Image 1 (cartoon, helix red, strand yellow):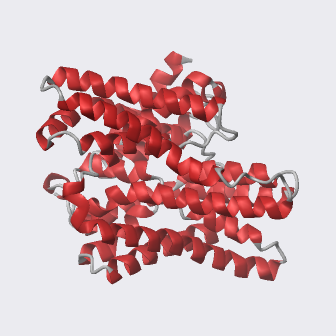
Image 2 (cartoon, one colour):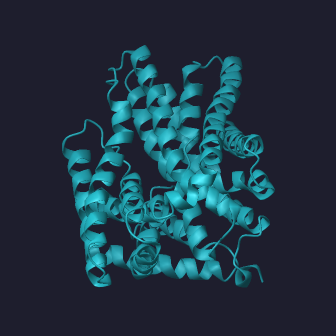
Length: 406
């Protein structure tokens, strides 16, 4: 299994390089590699591997590592001037997407005599953004500018808003269906628990980093701390919590945000330069994991609901981001192009869909089938389109490196 997995990673790297030759983001190659080599096609990365505890734990550790891309940019002295703008724009694009998708499906379901609470579940799933694809583009093309500096901290806040809205919605629906009520404490727990783990480990790690100037010791401290934070999260996620839904990227984000604010800019720059090779592999494997569950056959079976979902979500993200950027007087490039970078979605959507389906399967199986079929097909189609559009968003904003623009 380990050899098959390593071969899959190697082939994904080759896919990424081939796609890059076409001036497209390498992440598209990694996603396609996951789909083609996954259980629904060539089955090199088969379901047996995906279901092993070792694989799940490894992905969680790597997701925690990817979180450093976000957290190390959340240095307060750098973002405090744009803090209000980022918070407001995050709320308008996320809540705007929730409301717009819910409204569109509410109208459609009203005419089709389908229960209306299903519309709000679609809205709750739609508002979340998968940060890894956009961050991969930022890393690959070395984007720099107002859109990039807004997107990175927004990725962290967007996850928090997504968790609050989705679990609030699923709790209300669950109670209405009497399919077992979700305890109220679960909703804030899924947000504050990963933040708490990350902040605690980050504070201890940052304090130790401040006490030494030896870059090797600092780097070892970083690796050990990531493993400790991940192990705490894994233990809680799979052995204590009623539902394994902790966001490990959020743990990594909180951990790195804390230590980044405790050490000097010079130390942080040297540390991340040393960590970059590990981060590159972590990014590839996390994206590969997003692609593996996607069944390309669903593209041919996509129906009206899938089209409505993709289009309404894209409109909610784009116009919600544009509205927030406008009322906060953000730069024109943020107003025009930020929304395009928020379209990637699959990882978060599939997790939320699984929870929604398990909630509805016993009391409303037909509704469970509608959600599962629609989101699964949308994940395949949207992710391919969204990655290309996200890269174009950075390009239109003039934030790609000069070499890539040429």
